[in-house]
Image 1 (cartoon, rainbow, N blue to C red):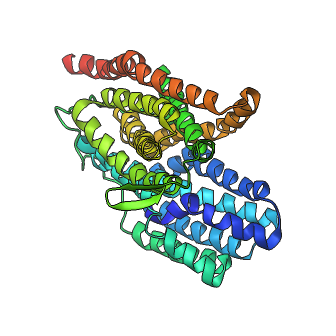
Image 2: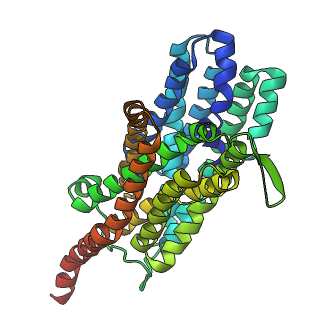
Length: 405
């Protein structure tokens, strides 16, 4: 997971140098990133099915090769078409690695499912933190082509080697806890059955609402900093002094990783929906407060950190909840279907620009983002929690009848 983090979070370092060399325009170059996100999310259900069928070892090893090929192609791409092809190949490889890694964690640790999914997802959320500076230095000293080539080969090789250590648990090897803190089904749902259950679509809607709401707010950080003239103002916190906007974006990398295992761990102890309610509510309030107090550089940094911290937990809470409801056997495939909500949310983010143009201000974007999160928080307790309880009870009912007979 750490080895594929740069494919998403390190991409921004390459856009400028590519544009300087070929003058394709940033918008055209960023189409490659959109293709990466779409292939990385929308193909996960198919990839998850293959992982559940053939195991994570062979699928993730092959995807390490794809990841290497993607960045090697980027290093020699002299046309937008080749750049787009590289992005699509990278997205396919990253999707297999992401889905397979999270799916395997969900299968191995049923009693700590939230924490396990969160720790695994944290590798993707914060995995680029240590390599951002080396990549930036190599781009500056040797060119972006060399950074693509050598980091691509290195990342791909590590994925291949580590994947050789992966395996899914054998039937009966991992027992479902007899008295889990959170309800877990004793039945394994097939992907087709999952799509027919209303609770899946409730989770999907919530995932899109929180995902798009957070992305919309995050995308407007720079305009807010500019509008309130705080972006370049130095801020000193915890012995570190940085310009406010740089500080806020740096905190994003750290808190985006920390929040995933933290909220996953909390959900293992107090329940998934209770944790969702608290996290989504904090996110909504944080987004609104950021709008109100953005004129203060210190508050701008603190509140943006709060927004980032309460946002990334969707990548631990939703996979854990999905597997709690639908079982371990098809965990990778079933969460893969839910994970496509990230791609749907990404497609909705450009609507923020339309809303900004229509209203003449980005304030409306923040209002919408805050409301989406608060509505999702309410849905967690009032809609998802009772629906999930009923779904698990219904799944257990036939087994109970059978045992009595």
